[in-house]
Length: 310
Image (cartoon, rainbow, N blue to C red; front, side, top):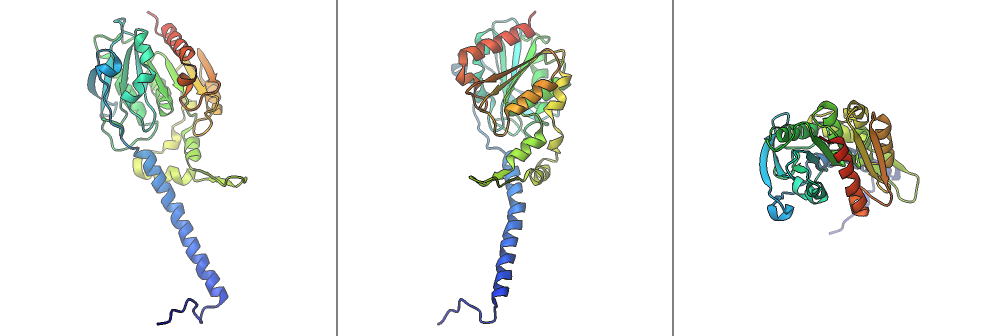
């Protein structure tokens, strides 16, 4: 049997048109499929399930469930301090969880603070089918704050919030809505979620100036999965509403991928007084603590001590 790889009825022009149509079809398929796949992965991070035990915390741990502001059931872990009632609620980053965040904030408990960590929706042990990396998670933090303020071992007038990456935007958004949050530490945050999605969709050809972003179709695709127009969430536009409560903005000097130093500076400019900005030399994303641990702990403790004083 003979196989003819060349159709005698196909001219060079016909072959060129056929190849062009095939390539165009593949390109269109990629333009549709890539944003759908990427947005699905962003909205449905892998669940890292963990528990915070007394052995982990070196202290008593109260594992609880509570409701987000919109009713989603969330899991949390309360680690009591020295009994003065001051409490820090910690918001983790996308793809992380509350127990995994605790080692990085345990110094607050050693300084006497109650510390409450929890799993955001669609993370860890909490309910929820998807995350929005900010706008809906504000409801989680507001639910966490309402929960801790209901406890007899918490002074409801002395509650602060702390978050990194997604947790930074969430802390800003929640504090802008809820005056019960008396102070905020926001680390490695973004100023504008629409811009963040454009960075998630960035594609460049190494060694050339050729680059583009699929941010717009990525945002559209995210709406299909979540029903949320995430580009409307802008911590830069919200942070000013926190004043006169204090805000400390922390960012690593080398953190310039999804969340940038410029984002930190924009957040600082938009914030009202009292406000502080700390750019940590040599630190990457959420890496300030690991680069200058003693300075970091002292500065965060001092900030909350002043903001949540009796």
